[in-house]
Amino acid sequence: MKKKIISSSKFPVSGPYSAAVEANDMIFISGQLPVNPSTGEMINDIKDATKQIFNNIQAILRKTDLDLSNIVKTTIFLKNIKDFPSVNEVYADFFPKDPPARSTVEASVLPKGALIEIEAIAVRE
Image 1: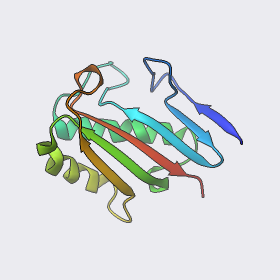
Image 2 (image 1 turned 120 degrees about the vertical axis):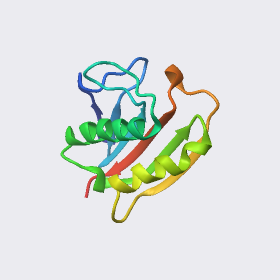
Image 3 (image 1 turned 45 degrees about the vertical axis):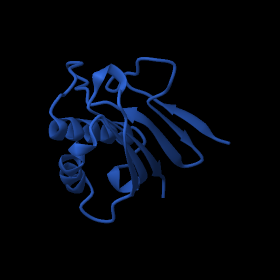
């Protein structure tokens, strides 16, 4: 198996895990929080938080010369499932055509008090 750790100061991690790992042309992106990488600030508006996460995911994918079109699966963790319509609205902007498979679950507590966390799997074509 060919395995490569994807890292950058633009998406720091705060624990014993990697921001992303590429293995055999698949990129596994760890759960991303809505943190502005320039300021370290946690975004607390659900729509802005969702946008920030996808901006962070795009930055990770750029390190692998991929983009959002390579994502085949996402998992969304919401502190409040009532935020689902707002998240869906932003999600549709990032995936206007052929969206990936997705799961969405409510989680009572997310790391650092975040409203949302998203993980993704991308595939190199």
